[in-house]
View (cartoon, rainbow, N blue to C red):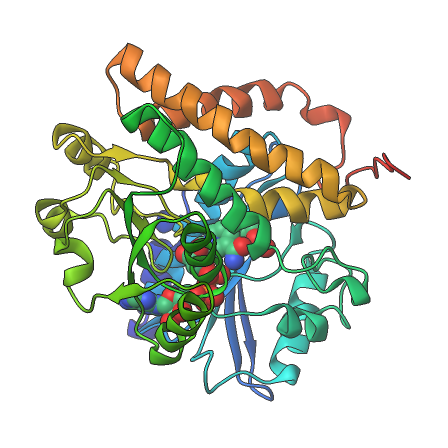
Length: 380
Ligand SMILES: NC(=O)C1=CN([C@@H]2O[C@H](COP(=O)(O)OP(=O)(O)OC[C@H]3O[C@@H](n4cnc5c(N)ncnc54)[C@H](O)[C@@H]3O)[C@@H](O)[C@H]2O)C=CC1
Ligand SMILES: O=C(O)CCC(=O)C(=O)O
């Protein structure tokens, strides 16, 4: 084997080693539009893969691969926890969402999604918007969460934010004995599609907020909104987001922010937010527990968007989506209770529930196609 061949083989092995748990990875390259993307399908036991598409200026292909592998696995658990008949998948586009996006790039992405022939459905995530997917939907039917005017169910960050609010209520009930959101202090990291809506609702409920975002225009926007509501927000920057004392830390930006360094710094009673993969590793769930900080498993709290886009694939019904999103409150209380009874972390309790559902799902495998789900047409 020449040197080049040996190098190629070792790269292949590395990717294959990394995807041991995953069913499929698609590397997408379209030089004419500048699209560089990775689609990862983790597990389709419960149904075709469903998960949003993130756009970030990843420093390397490895970093992008790592992210999409973690995110798609999270979607398998999120689908199982929310009890929807879909599997785990996710996509990442490598590029700066503020400067690199074009409609053509999203159309090219749509073509790659289409080539999977119904094995993967996608929509918005961090760095992407419903408008981006209007372009993608010109190339494939496998796009979810586009505006209602285009036949979609609208912005999925609306139910995601609502789910976070239910998660906060269940957490307050567990810690303080009352679900009341007012009179408590929350630190919100990330004021994007989800974080901004959570901040708005907390302000409306009479809560006190510390806010943080790397984008100054998002800070200005929440200050403006607080003023309209006759309220105020305190801005924290850099590490202050981890070191400031408050009741709850609400991460709504990046994952991996609960790690060896930040756990030492945190002065909160709970962590409840929308960010995917908040724990850098499962060990960090144990460390939070030891410090007496209650962790709301992210994939349970942030399932509102998934619930909406999954529902869209059955024939969207808003009432049904709201009802299922509201059930995040009870599911979370149950996980908190199980974790307490079994003296395990909340993420272990949630994972156990999901793994049982996946095991049960395997028995139904031969009865359905992994690329299509029936329409329910309930409410029509
Ligand atoms: N959009 C949705 O419905 C769902 C989103 N999520 C997760 O919630 C998180 C936020 O998602 P979106 O609001 O949709 O994203 P977004 O892109 O609309 O907003 C992210 C915000 O975080 C800020 N940000 C980025 N890096 C930061 C940092 N280091 N420190 C502080 N702020 C930072 C950005 O400037 C932006 O304002 C992501 O982890 C996403 O995967 C999870 C489930 C559904
Ligand atoms: O919210 C969406 O559009 C899809 C669900 C998803 O990607 C997520 O929950 O992370």
